[in-house]
Structures are given as structure tokens and as C-alpha cells.
Amino acid sequence: MIRPRLLPLLSLVILAGCLAPGMGSLSMNPTIAGGEKVRVDFDGKGQVILPENSDIQMLSPVLRIDSKLKQARYGFGFVVKTNQAPKKIIVEDVSDETPVTWAVDTQPELKDRHWIWDTRFFEPTEKNLQWVYQLDGSVRIFRFTITTADGRTLVMYGATNYIAMVKTYYRMLLGIDKPPPKTT
Image (tube, rainbow, N blue to C red; front, side):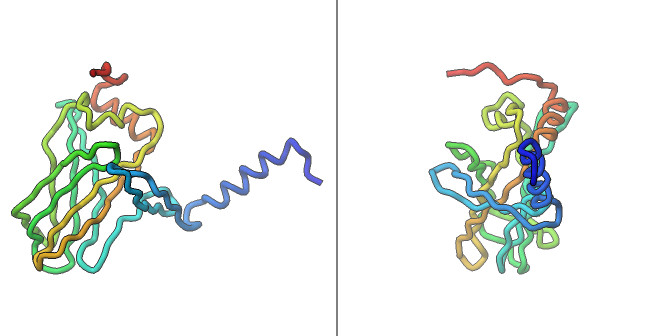
């Protein structure tokens, strides 16, 4: 018979075994801007599984920090599985209630079948970086609206999982230790 005091410990051991790396994947269905729910899949290590279809293979969206400038910018990209560049690409951060447009490329160019876009540098006090000030981990979701060479419109979602420790490191690189005052 198991002692009552050991039940919580046993539950933790069983749960840890279920979430061990290589033991499968997890999914979440967060609500994004506009009230829509999207599915985000994670592998056994907690990394986002990036979507792909017969046209596009998504690359992981990244936040790049310049510690000298104390500024950040996003980098986006995907691989086109054909050799034909899309006609138009729009990338929006849809993680919060209001979407933020980060890229509008009306003349996309491919380099080795890759489309790459770096946003402008921005200050850590801008509203679109408020998630870095949250102490817990967060997932940022980006909507890619891609008009293909043959005129079809594809909507795909790329996501990045930012664990709390990474966000702490980002705050250190940006030279911030508390959120800016709220403005109305």
C-alpha cells in the first residue's frame, strides 16, 4: 500500500516520465488576434514544430538583440519548395489582441529558395515588445499570408516558444529590469 504522503511524489515521477524528451509531442490551441484559435505543436523537448505544406517550409521566427544598441528586431523566413518566388508576403504578430504587421514584401526575392526578412530595429519600450517583461514563458505566433507565384493565397502560422530564462537573458541584453510605465 502506498502512503498518502508519497502519492504527490509518485504523481510527479509519472508525469515527468510522460513528458520526457522523445516521448511524443504536445499541442496547444491559443486564441490569437481576431478571436481565432490556432494549433501550435511542440516536440518532446518543448520546441515548436514548424508547419510545412507542398509549397512552403516555415523557418523559426527569431528575436535578434543588439546588446550595444539595446534594441531588438525580428527575423522571419521560409523555404519555397519550388523555384518560383511568391508575389506578396505579409507577416503579422497575432499573439495579442491587436495584430502587429512586421513585413509587407510586394517584390519578394529568393536566395537559394529561401525568403528572409529582418524587421527594423526597435526600442524595448515599444508596445510590441511588452511580452519580454512578463516573467513566465510565452509563445509568440506569427501569421504569414503568402500569395504564391500562381496567385493562390496561403495562410500559415509560425511560432516561437520563449522560456522564462531566455526572456530574462533578453532583458539583460536590452538593459532593462522592469517594464516601462503604463501609458493611457
